[in-house]
Each structure stands twice: as C-alpha cells, then as structure tokens.
Image 1 (cartoon, one colour):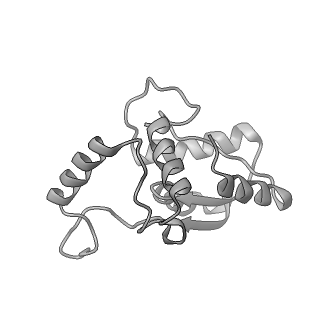
Image 2 (tube, rainbow, N blue to C red; image 1 turned 180 degrees about the vertical axis):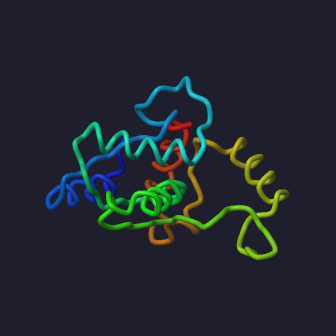
Length: 150
C-alpha cells in the first residue's frame, strides 16, 4: 500500500539515481521474528544492504527514526556516504534538561495509550504533514499504513 505522493517521490528519485530501498528489521517486507535491534545493528544493516546491492557509496535519505540510523552510518562510514538527507528526524526523543524539546515519560505513556485506542483510524497529521492535515484521504491512508506496518 503505497501513498501516491510517496510513490511520485521515489519514482522521481529513481529517474536520476540508483534507488535502493529497504525495510528495517521486523517491518515492511522483512522477517517478523526478530528482536528489537540496537542502533549499531541497524547501521550494519545499511552496510549489508549496500554490499549486497554492490553499492560502494550512496546518498542516504533517513526519515523519522531512520534519520538516526543514517546519521550514524554517515559518521562511522564517511567513505561510503556521499550525502545525508534527513526528514522528520530528531536528535533524541526523550526530554532531558539539555533537550527541552523532548517528550516526557508521562506524555509518551499518554501518546501510547491514545495510539492503542485509535490505531488504524484516521491519523492526526498536523505536526508531521501540515499541508495535508485536513485531507481526509491522507489521514485515512496514513492510519491504515500504521496499522499494516505494526
């Protein structure tokens, strides 16, 4: 189930580059019988996919939590990274005295409880995609996307 806007993006990227996409462990088309992997293991997965595809050097596009994975890969393998593009990425997600933008534990628990109640229904897109926040089709698509990828 591919969002038409996302399909246009990856189709356009593939017109001027060799596009290699992969799902992180336990999501998408990858095996489901995996434990939660450490960031270092996910970084090694990027290397393994690049090796399997015969890609010596790549521009990396990291979306959301994939941003941390791509940033760490770029920092530890600069010789294999030609560019780094981050979208919706974050330095950390938890609040700390030196990171006041982070989410406090009680906020996270409330968000998880709300997600358990509404998962699969129309999703609130105001923060992540304000240009389509009032588009019912986009909200419904993203809710279904979350349900299918869970």
